[in-house]
Image (tube, rainbow, N blue to C red; front, top):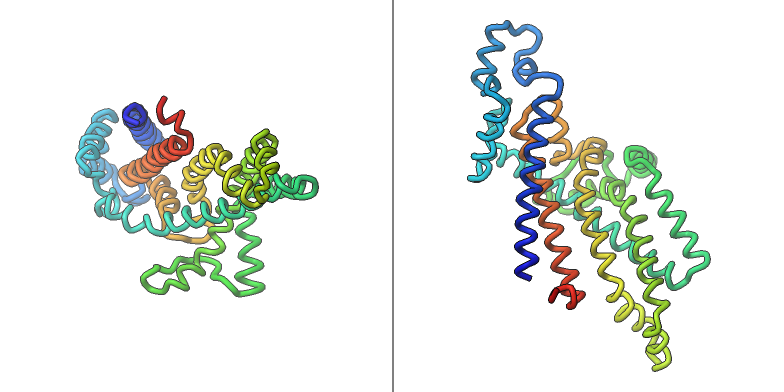
Length: 313
């Protein structure tokens, strides 16, 4: 376990550094300029140069990155170029909708995907083909198109859910849930296909092993064999894919939040990138990178608990 944590710390530090550096450089070198955007077309050259000096944009890129990194290491992500608000406060205000969307999408994908995978592995034949079709559809349907279909069907034709917008949980838990149904389904459908296929493959492999025949010969019920023994032994690859899916869902929020007008981190990073608000882009990218490294740690710990040999290695 100590070796696992040491490896995780080293890998995480390197990943966070690379992500922050690349994000800073790519955003800074993108066409456009924050000072130009703020001043608009009517700003004079003198105003432009003065604003660049005020914002620190006149300094060399390595110096600007080092200044940001020094602050970040002390918990200070800086302030927005436009609003002059703390980046930490801005991200904190946008975090709840994104977390609700991602966790909801993961639960939707996991429950439906694992159920389909188990049913397919046990039933084979038609169920296996159904899972293949669902997997193909889940991977091939673009999220924005699926979102449009869901809105047309369940917000316009049948006004069961709101088409766009987000309701805070504290204001109304029921309306909060309703505002997330369509975005969660849109975000999670692709994950259903991934989890279903992985579950079916892992379960099918376990069901073909000799220990399953031995338990059947001992008179154990099929339900007990599948859910108490086979599923546990098939859990490691499923858990790994769930971890990969969880981090992937965060990137998916960029599109889904903009389709459904959710005030989350996905929409925030799009707005900040378009306006060259580098401190916000850096802050959101850092949050996403932290999610990746923490998820990898959790998955490694769970897999170690499921596989004692790996834990002792």
